[in-house]
Amino acid sequence: MKFNKVLENLKTYEAGKPIELVVREFGIKNEDVIKLASNENPRGCSPRVVEAIQKEAKRANLYPDDSMYELKEGLAKRFDVKSSNIIIGAGSDQVIDFAIKSKANENNSILMAKTTFAMYEIYARQTGTRIIKTKSHTHNLEQFLELYKNNRDIVIIFLCLPNNPLGECLDTKDVYEFLKEIDEDVLVVLDGAYAEYAKFKDKNKEIVVQDLIERFPNVLYLGTFSKAYGLGGMRCGYGIANSEIIKTLYKLRPPFNITTLSLKAAIEALGDEKFVNGCIEENFIQMKLYEEFADEMKLEYIESFTNFITLKFTNSKKSSDIAQKLLKKGIIIRDLASYGINAIRVTIGTPEQNSKFFSKFREVVYDSTR
Ligand SMILES: *Cc1c(COP(=O)(O)O)cnc(C)c1O
Image 1 (cartoon, rainbow, N blue to C red):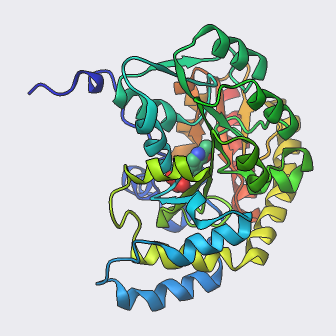
Image 2 (cartoon, rainbow, N blue to C red):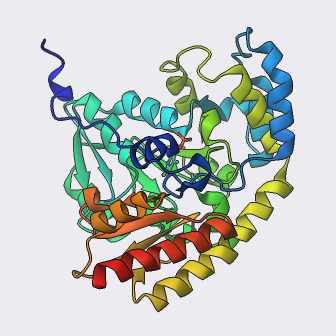
């Protein structure tokens, strides 16, 4: 059968391996598998959220409130913007899709960092647009600017702040200087999936969304409940922008695009700041242990402003080899070989999960040098 040409060379997104797969393939007991591959919150979500979802289960027969009034009001209050500045997606993933479909086509191009969130490229390829990437793996604004100036057909620029899968984060003041150079007709997407972590660690990374969209009417800010809020399984994210952008994205939104339960979960999660802050605080305490571990193992790492850390290997070790050996011991992490980097990305887990990771990693390295 013939399909659209743009789909021919399109790879499907390789999600982090699920726990179920490791149980099936290696016969490891479910409770012995540790998943540190998808940047989920290892402490789960707020107990208040669990309770709300259980209660709401009785209403699973009903479509959700398609206006998402309460959630949008909650977000509007949180970010000091209007409801008309907000769109909700089935994960911020879906808002990325809307953003790309709103402008990209086979006659233009979009710009992103060489190593960044894979879904930008996947959605972009569906439209036939050209994808331009910086030479630098991490975000380098000088390279962004040069490519922007030399390719006048760029319609969307993606900045992932902080960046997944490498963990680095630009300073907000540098981002603002960059935005001043960009034409108002170019949509700049600032993906803040890990913004809660970044601003906790370093005030220079804080983005005040209300100020951002007021000063730059061409910017779309993205946030998600999947990471710090611990709701990856609920699929809920949001976009915040000038109401003209939001109105256009709405044309691409299918009705009832998140579930009745997700909607309830997100509303409740927003109300429990204390839970989220506690998780973030512990995240960075635990990350310190990873940094010390990396030093001990003589591994390089990238300073991370997120809930994961990227560990780099020298030529004597191969990331895919290490990833496979860890998998056999029930530890799922993310191999970055497919990004052309000899490194693994490890989500910061609970204290117990992390110490297990350290000991299994030592075993793997010891076995392979024997
Ligand atoms: C996880 C992630 C998202 C979106 O996650 P959803 O679960 O779809 O909300 C977006 N951008 C980046 C960089 C991410 O890491």
